[in-house]
Image (tube, rainbow, N blue to C red; front, side):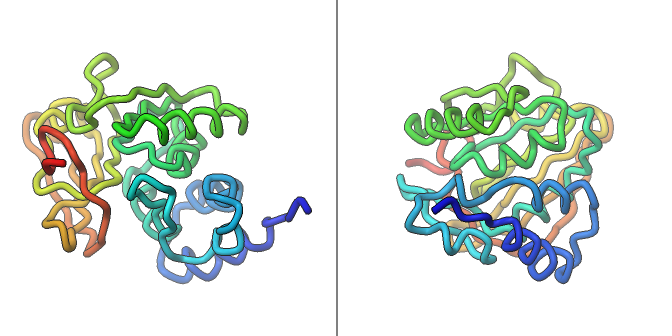
Length: 215
């Protein structure tokens, strides 16, 4: 049976996003439009629009909808941006970004996840996403600078290459802390300095790489 999850998405937007302070209309519309259930295995479809993370294999997760919305809102996307995503994962966050940005450049170190996300996103009709299999802590130099950078894994510090790849007035959102828990940090570039704002506590899988955690 081809289940219609439209009502479940509307409920998710109302109960988990608007009620918790997400106000960016474009973000709310994207979250109401993009089908989260297609990014997880069929056995979990019934859980797709509940507000919690879900496993996607390879010790990785798809983030809870509220965190996806909050991080995306913090990027202040208007539709003209070049956006860099570190950690493609399931491809769900990538889809939200692609809906709201001009172009998305996404980097994932786990090849099967990258290939699966690429196939899924292409089947959903997205044509403004470029994919790369690599250590995401190096960013993606070829296309710098980026107006927005999102990191979907927790890091002990903000990777230096990512700061360098941020455009003037560019925004980055990254979880920073230890392996047990992080703070979501929003970084805005002003000339050669970086303004940091703490958006609150969170818990992500580890950002593995040269400028993150060792595997």
